[in-house]
Image (cartoon, rainbow, N blue to C red; front, side, top):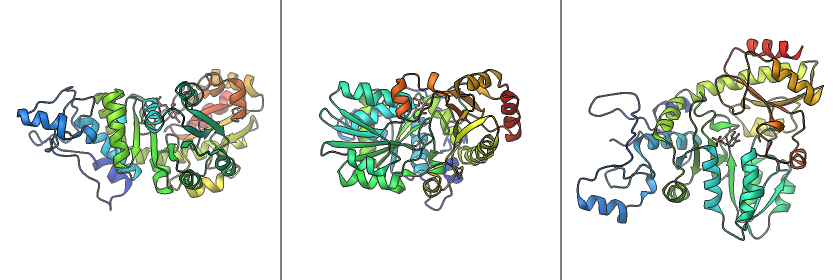
Length: 407
Ligand SMILES: Cc1ncc(COP(=O)(O)O)c(C=O)c1O
C-alpha cells in the first residue's frame, strides 16, 4: 500500500481536496480510493509484529516502518486517506477521524482535561457540547465557565490560573454569532490555555482557525465534509504530537474510531467539498438577503449580512465566505414558525446540516431541547428561532417554497 499522496504546498484547495490522501492501487490500477474493511493486518515476520507493538507507536496509524497497519481501531488505509486530506484542508500537521463529531469533541475534551482543571466556553454551542460542558465535565471534577464569547473582554475576565482550555464554536449553533478567534487565541495562550474551535459551521473552506493561532480544530464531518447526509464522522485536527496522543487515547483506548465505509464515503464527498461550499455560500447569501426583506420575517442572523452584529469580523475571519447556516424568527414567533415548518414542501423539516438538501428546524424544540430554557435564553436562543441549513438546490426554488409556506 503506497502512502497517501502528500499535498503540494502550491496546490489550491480543490486540488488538495481531490488529490491529498489519494492512491492508485498498484496491482489493479484502480483509480478510485480503495475501501479496506479489514479489522486486522498481517505481519510478515515475528519481528515485524514485535516492532509494531513495542517499538513503533501506533500514533500515525501506520505502525510498522514500511507503513503497514496493525488493527483497525488504531487506523486503517481508508481512514488514513481521509485523515490526510482533512489535515491538509485545515493547513494542519495531522488529523484523526472519529466515529462522529461528538466522538471528536468528547475525545478532545477528555484528552485536554483532568480533575481540577477549569474550562472557559461560550454560552451558545451545539446542544450535546453544552451537555458536556454543564453535565459530563463537572462529573469528572472539571469546572466550566460559560460566557458570551463574542465579547473578548468577558472571555479574558473568565480565565483563571487553573484554566486549561478555551473552547470555542464560531459561527455558533444556532445563533450564528461570530467569535474573534485571533483575539481569543491570544487571550488563551497568555494564560497558558489550549484553544480549541469547533469549525463545523464555517468549514475549512471559509475559515482556517489554525492560521489565526488556534491550537486544535474539531469537525463534525457528518456535515459539509461528507456533504450528502449519508455518513457520520468527526475529526480532531492540529499539531502532530497532540493528534498522535489523541489517536492513542480517543481511537486506540476509547475506541471512537470511524467505520471504514463512512471514512470512504466522506473521503469521496471531500472531492467536491470546495465546489459545494462555493455554491452553499452563494445560495445562502441570496436566501438570507431575501428573508431579511420578507414582510413576515422579524430578524435574520447570517454573518454575511451587513446587519449581523459581527459582520465586519466575519469579513476578516471568514475569507472564503459566510457558510450555509442561518437562523431567523418570524413576526408571529413560535406559532408562525411552526405553521411555516408544517407547510414547506421542497425544503425538509429535519435536524442536521451540510446536506445537498435544504433542512429547516425549530432549534429550541429539536436540536437544542436538551438545553434548559433559561440557558437557551441566556445564549440568545429565542423561543421562535428557526435554523436553516441551505442546500444546493436552485435558490429561486428554495425561495419559492419558503414564500408559499409564509403566506
Ligand atoms: C456545531 C456542531 N458540532 C458538532 C456536532 C455533532 O456532530 P455529530 O452529529 O457528527 O456527532 C454538531 C451536530 O449537529 C454540530 O452542529
